[in-house]
Length: 262
Image (cartoon, rainbow, N blue to C red; front, side, top):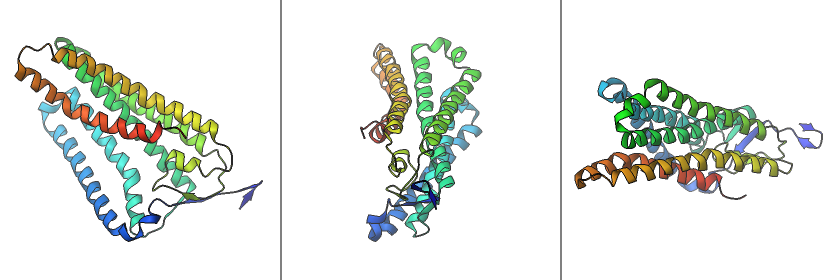
C-alpha cells in the first residue's frame, strides 16, 4: 500500500539470525536453557522472599521487584526470539512491534532505577544504620518502586510514539526484536532528531542513575573502611558484592548499546 511517496508498512521481518542458519538449533538450545534458568531463578527468588518472613526487609523487597521486572523483560523478548530460531514466522505486525518495544523499554528502564533504589537502600544501611528502619519504611520503598515504574512507562511512551510516527520504507529489521535504533533505521526520512532524543533519554536514564549508584558506593566504601576489624570489613564488602556486580553488568551492557554515537 502507498501513502504519498511512502509505502505503508504493516509488518516487519527480523533478520537477526539470517547469517546463523547452520547454528540455529545450537542457539535455540542455549537460549532456551538460559531462558528456563532465568525464569526458574527469578521465580524461586520471589517465592522464597514471599514465604520467609525474615526476608520481609527493604533489601529483599527491592530484590523481589527486580526479579519480577526481569521476568517480564525476558518474556517480552525471548519467546519470540526462540520461535524465530525454530524457523517459525520471522515477521511481526507494526502493532506487535510497538507493543514489544514499549514493554522492553518500560522494564529495561525500570530495572535501571530499581538498581538505583537498591543502591540507596545499601547506602542508608551502611551510612545511617540507626535510622535505617525509619528512613526505609514501607511507604518509602513502595514510592521508590512506583517511581522506577513510572519513569519506565513515561520514557517508553515517549520513545515508542516518536519512533512509530516515522514513515517506514523497508521492512527488514537487522535485529532479533524491536529495539529502538534498528527500527528507526527503516525510516524513509532523516532520523537525526529521533537519534538526539534517544541519546538524551539514554543519558538521563543510564548516566544519572549510574552516577547516583557510584556516589552511594563511594560513601559506602568510605564507611566500610572505617570498620576496625578485618572480618567486619570483609563481611560488609560481601554484602554489597552481588548488587555491585549486577549494576556493572546491567549498566555496562546498556551503555554499550545506547550511549555509543550513531
